[in-house]
Amino acid sequence: MSRQKSKNTAPEIAVRRCLHERGFRYRIDVKLEPDLRTRADLAWKGLKLAVFIDGCFWHGCPEHATRPAANREWWAKKLDTNIARDRRTDDALRSRGWVVRRFWEHQTPEEIADKIVETIDELRARDLRGSVVRPDD
Image (cartoon, rainbow, N blue to C red; front, side, top):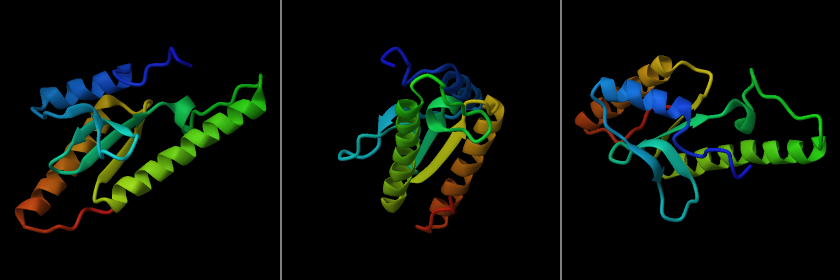
Protein backbone atom coordinates (compact mmCIF):
# COMPACT_ATOMS: atom_id res chain seq x y z
CA MET A 1 0.00 0.00 0.00
CA SER A 2 2.96 2.32 0.50
CA ARG A 3 3.32 2.40 -3.28
CA GLN A 4 -0.15 3.85 -3.79
CA LYS A 5 -0.02 7.48 -4.84
CA SER A 6 -1.74 9.84 -2.44
CA LYS A 7 -1.26 12.94 -4.56
CA ASN A 8 -0.68 13.84 -8.19
CA THR A 9 -2.76 10.93 -9.44
CA ALA A 10 -3.76 10.86 -13.11
CA PRO A 11 -7.38 11.94 -12.39
CA GLU A 12 -6.15 14.85 -10.23
CA ILE A 13 -3.71 16.02 -12.87
CA ALA A 14 -6.37 15.84 -15.59
CA VAL A 15 -8.79 17.96 -13.52
CA ARG A 16 -6.04 20.46 -12.67
CA ARG A 17 -5.20 20.76 -16.37
CA CYS A 18 -8.87 21.50 -17.20
CA LEU A 19 -9.11 24.14 -14.49
CA HIS A 20 -5.80 25.73 -15.45
CA GLU A 21 -6.87 25.96 -19.11
CA ARG A 22 -9.96 27.84 -17.93
CA GLY A 23 -7.81 30.32 -16.03
CA PHE A 24 -8.44 28.97 -12.54
CA ARG A 25 -5.63 28.78 -10.01
CA TYR A 26 -5.68 26.60 -6.93
CA ARG A 27 -3.54 25.04 -4.26
CA ILE A 28 -2.80 21.32 -4.31
CA ASP A 29 -2.35 18.79 -1.50
CA VAL A 30 -3.41 21.41 1.02
CA LYS A 31 -3.57 20.99 4.78
CA LEU A 32 -6.85 22.77 5.47
CA GLU A 33 -6.86 23.13 9.23
CA PRO A 34 -3.85 22.94 11.56
CA ASP A 35 -5.43 20.37 13.87
CA LEU A 36 -6.89 18.09 11.19
CA ARG A 37 -4.82 15.40 9.46
CA THR A 38 -6.68 15.65 6.19
CA ARG A 39 -5.29 17.24 3.05
CA ALA A 40 -7.47 18.33 0.13
CA ASP A 41 -6.50 17.43 -3.41
CA LEU A 42 -7.43 20.97 -4.50
CA ALA A 43 -8.35 23.93 -2.35
CA TRP A 44 -9.29 27.57 -2.41
CA LYS A 45 -8.62 28.74 1.15
CA GLY A 46 -10.14 32.18 0.64
CA LEU A 47 -13.41 30.61 -0.44
CA LYS A 48 -13.05 27.74 2.03
CA LEU A 49 -13.58 25.24 -0.77
CA ALA A 50 -12.01 21.78 -0.46
CA VAL A 51 -12.06 19.30 -3.35
CA PHE A 52 -11.29 15.60 -3.10
CA ILE A 53 -10.96 13.27 -6.09
CA ASP A 54 -11.44 9.82 -4.62
CA GLY A 55 -10.31 6.51 -6.04
CA CYS A 56 -13.15 4.07 -6.61
CA PHE A 57 -11.43 1.16 -4.87
CA TRP A 58 -10.03 2.97 -1.83
CA HIS A 59 -13.06 5.14 -1.09
CA GLY A 60 -15.94 2.78 -1.88
CA CYS A 61 -17.48 4.04 -5.12
CA PRO A 62 -21.06 2.75 -5.31
CA GLU A 63 -20.58 1.93 -9.01
CA HIS A 64 -17.07 0.49 -9.18
CA ALA A 65 -15.89 -0.53 -5.73
CA THR A 66 -14.65 -4.07 -5.39
CA ARG A 67 -13.47 -6.07 -2.41
CA PRO A 68 -10.56 -8.49 -2.72
CA ALA A 69 -11.44 -12.13 -2.11
CA ALA A 70 -8.14 -12.92 -0.41
CA ASN A 71 -7.96 -11.75 3.20
CA ARG A 72 -11.57 -10.59 2.88
CA GLU A 73 -12.13 -9.54 6.50
CA TRP A 74 -8.99 -7.41 6.67
CA TRP A 75 -9.85 -5.63 3.42
CA ALA A 76 -13.46 -5.06 4.47
CA LYS A 77 -12.31 -3.42 7.69
CA LYS A 78 -9.67 -1.32 5.88
CA LEU A 79 -12.02 -0.06 3.18
CA ASP A 80 -14.92 0.57 5.58
CA THR A 81 -12.54 2.57 7.78
CA ASN A 82 -11.55 4.70 4.77
CA ILE A 83 -15.18 5.47 3.99
CA ALA A 84 -15.97 6.34 7.61
CA ARG A 85 -12.91 8.61 7.77
CA ASP A 86 -14.10 10.43 4.63
CA ARG A 87 -17.48 11.10 6.26
CA ARG A 88 -15.84 12.33 9.51
CA THR A 89 -13.54 14.60 7.50
CA ASP A 90 -16.47 16.06 5.57
CA ASP A 91 -18.39 16.70 8.79
CA ALA A 92 -15.40 18.28 10.54
CA LEU A 93 -14.67 20.59 7.62
CA ARG A 94 -18.30 21.61 7.12
CA SER A 95 -18.63 22.41 10.81
CA ARG A 96 -15.74 24.86 10.33
CA GLY A 97 -17.36 26.58 7.37
CA TRP A 98 -15.71 24.69 4.52
CA VAL A 99 -17.58 23.67 1.38
CA VAL A 100 -16.55 20.11 0.59
CA ARG A 101 -16.85 18.60 -2.87
CA ARG A 102 -16.00 14.95 -3.54
CA PHE A 103 -15.70 13.40 -6.95
CA TRP A 104 -14.91 9.90 -8.19
CA GLU A 105 -11.89 9.07 -10.32
CA HIS A 106 -14.20 7.64 -13.02
CA GLN A 107 -15.90 10.99 -13.61
CA THR A 108 -14.55 12.89 -16.60
CA PRO A 109 -12.11 15.71 -15.82
CA GLU A 110 -14.35 18.12 -17.74
CA GLU A 111 -17.41 17.15 -15.68
CA ILE A 112 -15.49 17.61 -12.43
CA ALA A 113 -14.01 20.93 -13.58
CA ASP A 114 -17.49 22.16 -14.59
CA LYS A 115 -18.87 21.40 -11.13
CA ILE A 116 -15.88 23.00 -9.39
CA VAL A 117 -16.22 26.16 -11.49
CA GLU A 118 -19.95 26.26 -10.74
CA THR A 119 -19.23 26.03 -7.00
CA ILE A 120 -16.53 28.73 -7.20
CA ASP A 121 -18.89 31.03 -9.07
CA GLU A 122 -21.62 30.48 -6.44
CA LEU A 123 -19.21 31.16 -3.57
CA ARG A 124 -17.80 34.30 -5.20
CA ALA A 125 -21.31 35.60 -5.95
CA ARG A 126 -22.39 35.07 -2.36
CA ASP A 127 -19.23 36.73 -1.06
CA LEU A 128 -19.87 39.75 -3.31
CA ARG A 129 -23.37 40.07 -1.86
CA GLY A 130 -21.86 40.00 1.61
CA SER A 131 -23.60 36.81 2.56
CA VAL A 132 -21.87 34.42 4.91
CA VAL A 133 -24.21 31.59 4.00
CA ARG A 134 -22.55 28.77 2.08
CA PRO A 135 -24.41 26.68 -0.51
CA ASP A 136 -25.85 23.39 0.63
CA ASP A 137 -23.56 20.43 0.14
